[in-house]
Length: 355
Image (cartoon, rainbow, N blue to C red):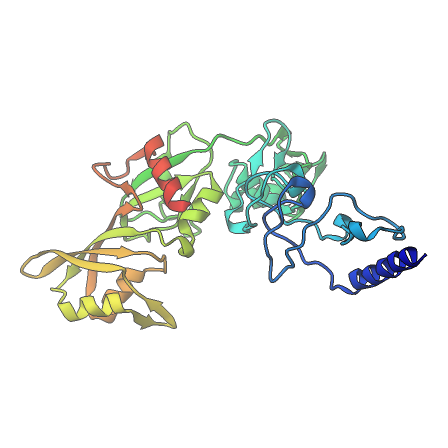
């Protein structure tokens, strides 16, 4: 009798204790206890494990050995993931990062991202499939050329998921294979798909190539030249451009005048301009002439016209600016206006840099 009374009181105590705990917050990597691992901490999340059998409706009488009650159904849904399957699918997902999320497409009628609950705009879905640029996709949608699940949609921001069927001019949207190109951009071309002022763009370098729609990875301004990448892999492009990855970009710069040591120290220490801190990772004098000099400047951030602004702050004018290297990629002897595919080795080395 005493033993039964003790068990009853213990069960009541544990149930009250469990119900008084704060609600669990969402978890990032890891699986539930049924999958064999404990979810990783998310903002001081308790490290107790979870069971796969949810408790629905009223709590039934439980034995002390069953505590804590494992309420998988009370957990919020996991966020979208880049690689792996969902937690209940048995693989460990990585952290969600929308800028790095690279969709996986099914051939045929629809596109797919790993999390079927993630919504992306219709124009973005068309762009990610490699069919058109974002602005071109928006125009096609407004012109009534795009159907979503059999119905014409005129809103480029209409939410879509992987279960939706997208058609353009009556044909199913089919993802294209990934393309990675290097171009030696000449001076005088604008880095955009379409220029509202009618100026020539970098896409004239791609004319005649049998490739799907691609976009430039970052920019080189109109007066700059050299290494410019193109791809239809938006996740890869975003990773290269992410300042957190600190991808080095090397430029050869012809300057009007002789840049002295004081100016070089300012550029590497940091120069404040219009509320931004501009800073070169390194500056090296390559050669000096009677009136001009050539510098090698390495940047790890991509602020607009950064080198020109730094040198202007030091009272120097840039005559030529050529990007010769990006991460492990060298411009080499690629002719002006020339385009080539990146090699498997180059892609592998870049993948290691990007982690």
